[in-house]
Length: 175
Image (cartoon, rainbow, N blue to C red):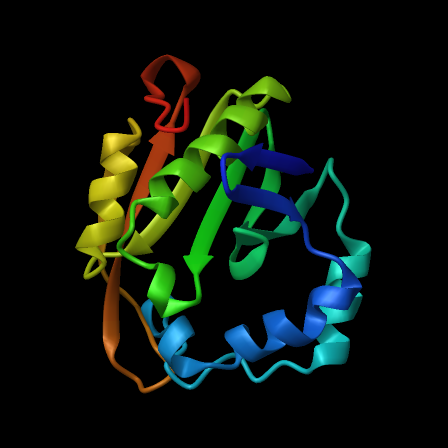
């Protein structure tokens, strides 16, 4: 996958990106919102192996660049029955809170719908109200709140929110 909009680029992550991704995934500040305040503890080799096995039809890890500088990652996974699950992390803090996430999500969502997906789902931490606001701006429907449904690496109880989006509800913010 290769998607461009202005100075934004989303492309398939490749084994050559493994070092950067491993650094982000092992950084507790980047991963805390996903329940990993101590990071994932993955090696560069493990990440490279995961990237090498990605396929368009099953899902991919995607690298996000702004002005040709890597700033984060996205992913999608084919759940079957026309449903894709997506995720996004803008890992470089200087690029957070600048409206890039909304445009990046729009690019990916539009591409997935064009590829035949009829439903996109995601979940986020209940505390991540900034992300929830963006998802709802894009047209995602809040399906449920899962109270105290899991524990993070520090043993703290966490809650999540499940969202779904269909093409008729999608409000594209990258046009």
